Image 1: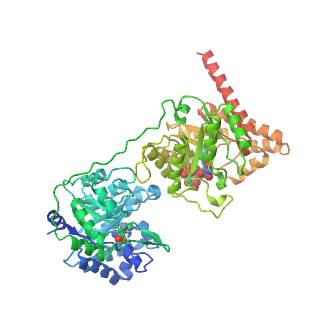
Image 2: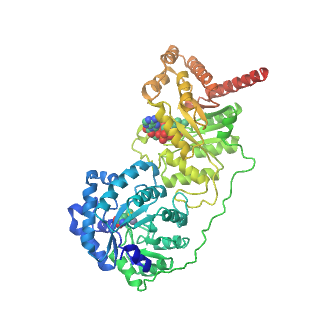
Image 3: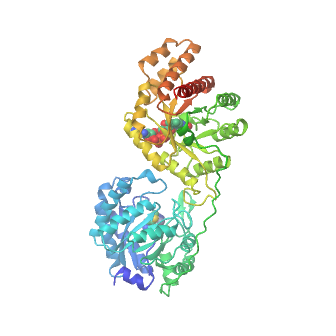
Amino acid sequence: MGLLQDLKERILIADGAMGTLLYSHGVDRCFEELNLSKPEDIIHIHEAYIAAGAEVIQTNTYGANYVKLARYGLEDEVPSINRAAVRLAKKAAGNKAYVLGTIGGLRSINKSAVSIDEVKRTFREQLFVLLNEDVDGLLLETYYDLEELQTVLAIARKETDKPIIAHVSLHEVGVLQDGTPLSEALARLEQLGADVIGLNCRLGPYHMIRSLEEVPLPKKAFLSAYPNASLPDYRDGRLIYETNTDYFKETALAFREQGVRLIGGCCGTTPKHIEAIANALTDRTPITEKVVKQRHVPISIQTNEPNAAPPLQDIVRKRRSVIVELDPPKKLGIAKFLEGAKALKEANIDALTLADNSLATPRISNMALGSIVKEQLGIRPLIHITCRDRNLIGLQSHLMGLHTLGITDVLAITGDPSKIGDFPGATSVYDLSSFDLIRLIRQFNEGLSYSGKSLGQKTNFSIAAAFNPNVRHLDKAVERLEKKIQCGAHYFITQPLYSERQIEEVYEATKHLETPIYIGIMPLVSARNADFLHHEVPGITLSDEIRSRMAACANDPVQSAREGIAIAKSLIDAAFDLFNGIYLITPFLRYEMTVELVRYIHEKEQAAQERKVLHG
Ligand SMILES: Cc1cc2nc3c(=O)[nH]c(=O)nc-3n(C[C@H](O)[C@H](O)[C@H](O)COP(=O)(O)OP(=O)(O)OC[C@H]3O[C@@H](n4cnc5c(N)ncnc54)[C@H](O)[C@@H]3O)c2cc1C
Ligand code: MET
Ligand SMILES: [Zn+2]
């Protein structure tokens, strides 16, 4: 008899957690390395699960891959650790249990932390060792990212005919983190050839059962569930799980009612939990019919008001567009800021962009000021959002706040690291990369939170992303733009550029993109300001001519500003015919400078239009 033949006829019981069990016994190092250094401990755990009733056990190889072992300097031990793991499990199992070779997912909340190429490479290496050791089947578990699981499952299916069990992990009931309903995800896994499909980790039985209520009995595959013992509690720096195992008796019956044929445990479970399941399931006959609960799809309310202004990406595609940055003050008191905002509105800008603690220095919240300029002055605020200052919870709360305030224009950026700012000891969060943040906002626009949970409404964000052309290899920066477009960026805004030649180079390097770009221009205010940018800001190089022009008026602030404006005007001239979008950065709240430049752009535009009319 084989594993699948058995599953056809009856419910099988699997083992529970390895990692959390070791951890609860005080092991606080690489769990998989113990296959080499403490083999008897691992055998002992396998035996305890079998004694409790497990008929299917898994190798201690959840994190025995190149990426995770490298954290312990053990990346060269992938073959030896996996080989040892299978031998230990087989020794414990004898002919009493099937041995599954476990491979764990790599991507969690941060999708871009591990590339798909790396996923494939890492997976193949571990897969071949496990298959060579002749496991009875494979357990692909704890995959939050469906793309990753589909990729590795396809590889495994090509390489072996042995049973493959494929498990996703959920943050929310019934839905994966990208919004895919569980039933659809499992159907895809079945289609890719998984023999057993189901869930493990993150959720306890209650939420898993609710999730499975929406899943029909698969046609060819079998369902499985390895719930956590409970939701974890955080005590004295440790994650603690519920230890009451009676609850697992009731839930085993509920899993059976959902058509689950392979029931085990994940984090926090122990041999006692498995024993409870085994005691409860005296009748191992699987159900063959099931009433499936319809997934509750919340009605999405589109927030797009009929007369809402078109998004900036549409405006800049059609006509000249000027947006201006006016940074929130570093001190309390916003009178001068509001004066500047008003003057810029009168000069006729399309949006006022508000930085998010730029240079990692605290400023008045740009959300607060954005709301004030919108409500009091009728200005369209464009809010920069860094990944530096807010974790995944804070970012989502921030986005919901912006939506609630009716602010729809955002710029998703990594953010200058805290090290460079006024509080170098502060944490730079970076739960998400700029790519992930762009994806998150796009997901909000579909009405879904990061974990795939419905937000009840769709947001309507227009998503800008940053473009830094001040790098050695412009082609690499352009590759990042392409990736940002894939993630959902609607348009780009560049760092300030300081030479006509560079503006042309940027045009040449990006003319194949259909996504609009606003070219950044920041007027210089003094020779010192020019020297600072040239010598101290990575990537920014000012031409000798510009620096000597600024140096020539070093002791005359009025003349310096004039010269700065003149230089900015020639940069505008260079950008004018190549790009519709101009992004002006106001230096040190000196808004009279950017006001003058906005006027210059509009006059130039008007003259160009008149010429066009004249010449037909
Ligand atoms: C329009 C604009 C507005 C900004 N506003 C703010 C703000 O409000 N607050 C703030 O703190 N910061 C701000 N910044 C700065 C920005 O956060 C950092 O400069 C950032 O690293 C570049 O943009 P990003 O965050 O999208 O970078 P990403 O494209 O996410 O890049 C992140 C990091 O990857 C590396 N990288 C990027 N491109 C390359 C390349 N071609 N070659 C090698 N390495 C590369 C760099 O280390 C870079 O810092 C702004 C930048 C721009 C262009
Ligand atoms: C993090 S999910 C659990 C992985 C593995 N099955 C273990 O119990 O250690
Ligand atoms: Zn787990």
